[in-house]
Structure formats: C-alpha cells, structure tokens
Length: 282
Length: 247
Ligand SMILES: Nc1ncnc2c1ncn2[C@@H]1O[C@H](COP(=O)(O)OP(=O)(O)O)[C@@H](O)[C@H]1O
Ligand SMILES: [Mg+2]
Image (tube, rainbow over all chains, first blue to last red; front, side, top):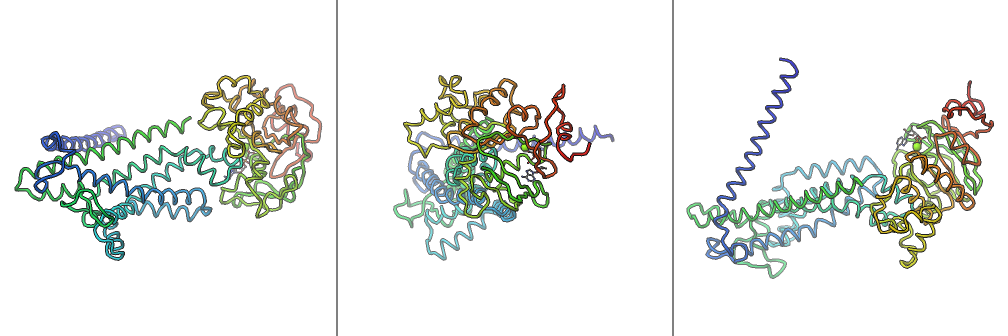
C-alpha cells in the first residue's frame, strides 16, 4: 500500500466520521422540530403554564432561564475580565502566567456537576442561601467563569502587539492603555466569550436543578431567596411523566425553545467573532 | 541630551549591547546603522523603556535623557515616554478616524474644542495637512503607507516629545514617501533630538549630522569620511570604514 492509497483511506475515514456527526446533528435537530412544533401553538411562548405544565405555555420558565443567565453574567463578567486584565496587563512573571492559563483550561474541562456540588455546598449549605435564583446564578457564574476567562483572554491576547506598543509609546498609563486600547480593540472577542458562556449556562441543568429552580408555584421571584422556574427543570419534570402524552409534547416544545435560545446565542457569538477577525485585519 | 554610561543590555543570557558609553547632543540627527539583529531597535527601545514588558530583558549601567536616569526605580515611565517618542518600522494607526488618531495621546490633556487646532498644527508639521484636510473624518487605515507613517509621526508630535526615536521609519515606504519623511525630519531637527535607525548607508549619510555604527554590541562613530561608491554601499563597505574593522 503506497502513501497515496493510505492518504485516500484516511480521507475516506475522516469523511465518513464527519458525515456521521453531521447526520447525527441534523437528525437531532429534525426530531426536535418534528416533536416540538406541535406544542408551538399561538400562546406557547407567552402564556403561563397550566395543569402542572400539561397545558398552557412556558412564559415564566423562559423568563426564569433568562433571569438566571443574565444575573450569572453580571456576577461572572467582572471577575473574568478583571482576572484576564490582571493576567495579561499587570502580571510580570511568565511562569505564573502559564500556571494560571493551565489552571483555567483544567477548570474549563471539569465536569460541571462538580461545580454544582461545590457551589451548592458553599452557597446553599454553608452560607445557608437555600434554593434560590441568587444561589443558582452564583453557581452558574462559577461554572462559566473558566469559559469566559479563556475566551476573553484569547480575545485580549489576539490583539496585535503593535497596538499595545503604539499606545505605550504615546505614554499612556496602564489604566488608559486598558480603557482606550485593550478593551475597544478586543470588544467583539469579549462579546463572543460572553455569548458562549451564556450558551453553556443555558445548557446546564445539573448544577441548578436543586439549587435554584422549582417546577411550579412561582412566577417571577419576589425576593432574593425565591427559586425560579426554568426551561431545564420544566423539561426534566415533564419528561418523567412518560405515560402522559400532553406532558411529553409540552416537554418537546420547551426543549425546542431552549435549543433555539442556545442556537441564537451561538449564532450571535459567531457573528461577533467574524467581526473581530475583520477588525484585527485592518 | 542622551547619555549612555557603561550601559549593557541582554535578553536572558544573550548580550545585545555591551558597556556602551557615549553621548548625543541635543537638536541633532544621529543615524544608527548596523546589520539586521545587531541591536539597533534594542538601543532605541531602552530610551523609552519599551522593553519593560519583556520578562527576560536585563540591563546594567545607566542611560540618561535630559538628565533623567531612565532606568532608576521610581522614574515616571509614562512621562519619559511622552518626552521620548518612538516611530516604528511599520506605521500602526488605530482603526479610527484621522483626527482621533492624531489626538490619541493628548485626548485627556487638552479640551475637546482644541482638538481641531492641535490636529492641524501637527499635521502641518508633517506636511500631511493639505492631503487630508478634507477627509479628517475618514478612517486612518484608508491612507497610504507613507501617509500613515507621517500620521503616526504627527500623533507622536502632538504629545510634545523632545526626543524622536525612528526605527527604520522608511523601510516599508515607496521612494516618494521616503523622500518626504527624510525632508520632514530636517525641519524637525531644530526642536527635537532625533535618532534615526536605518540599514541604508546612503540614507544615514545624507540625513544625519553624525552616523554611528553598531556592531557586536559596540557603538562606534563612523569617523572615516566616506568615498561614495558608484553603486549603493553594501554593509561590508560600511564596516570597512569603521576603525578597527579587519579588511
Ligand atoms: N523580545 C526579544 N526576546 C529575545 N531576543 C530578542 C527580542 N527582541 C530582540 N531580540 C534579539 O536581540 C537582537 C537584536 O535585535 P534588534 O535590536 O531588534 O536588532 P535590529 O533592530 O538591529 O535588527 C536580535 O538578535 C534579536 O534576536
Ligand atoms: Mg530593528
């Protein structure tokens, strides 16, 4: 067997695998659509759920998911951004920098259930915060922190050194340098990072299931110690009622909405990333 | 104005500049020539401490700019960099409009209504005003390389530096823009001390009041008058004019 045949075989193999993955992805999407669309009646998005989720819509569940995600970013972004700037702009020691970078990659690969557990033990049990949207968003914040940190750092590091040097040569102080060069020039990269972090948070169920959410009985949280209903919990609970076709249909509908949300976030992240590449090529 | 005293610089174990002791007069143009990798850029960058971000960069001895010890702990490095401006080999404009680029370094220091006047003044100084006065709101990246290089010079001048470090400022430019910049530095000379790094021997000779050669970590004056060769000088012929260089 010569090199060319070998190469052809490898290519064929890679082609098959790629095809399988794409096909799998499309069949999941197709199933989601086929199963989810029947639930999409007029008021599905904007109606309250009724009869323990068997009828009505998913308005408060969607709202709860959005609240959790928004608050999560509110906690997580300042910490991630601060640590990135500390790492790239202030830290002098290269060894420590590498160590921090490795650490964030490891954290990023850690199974999220561990974050959920640790977060629950710390915020929920030790701080006695109980099951609430605040606890849940704090846990999610810890969870998406590595994702945010890594993507924001990559955006800042992708900034061509020449911009930094041009600013430095004009006598810009470090805060001015950050404010006027680093942040504006890596803005799109950062937005991408936030959106990816959000998409990740939206996909997480395990970490918030027992710390932040409730299935029914709550619309908007009225205090810091209230739980929220979310799409994730809604889907899980309804899906367990396998004997009840209405529940299952509603679960598929909610699943489709959640998928749409993640898809939109990813699409937006991709659009911003493209923008960033264009900017840096100027 | 600029004074090196037993100054050495190294990246880790690699010594780039060794035991330099020399000084440069104010309001003059000094050209620095040398082979690629000989340390020309490094020599310029120490004058405004541009290597501070490089972890393994080491120095010994001292450098003074206008009596100020550049590497003394406690030196206001931002003030130093405003006093010692640097122009890079490749012009780097920000993806903003022309005015914003010109006033980038002084934005916080002057009031907004002075922006146009300050911009016009420095743009005139670099002979760019006539070319851009009708398109000040356009992105600076739409200018030609030569115009961009003059724009970065205007941006630096706006900060009010006394020393101008120019690191092969014309090496990425066409002959016409090169001539424009060469002419321009002559007009800046009476108010600024200029260091001009080049690898073109002709250029060094024609623009500078004195020429220094950097080789093996040493800086030597180009003391022997040059007999201009018919074809452009090669680097060896430059070195042969340096005292002590083996034939
Ligand atoms: N950041 C750096 N880290 C390590 N070595 C460097 C760095 N910058 C420059 N050098 C080395 O220092 C030497 C001098 O470089 P430089 O001053 O840029 O030379 P020139 O401008 O004369 O071409 C070169 O051998 C180069 O490899
Ligand atoms: Mg150089």
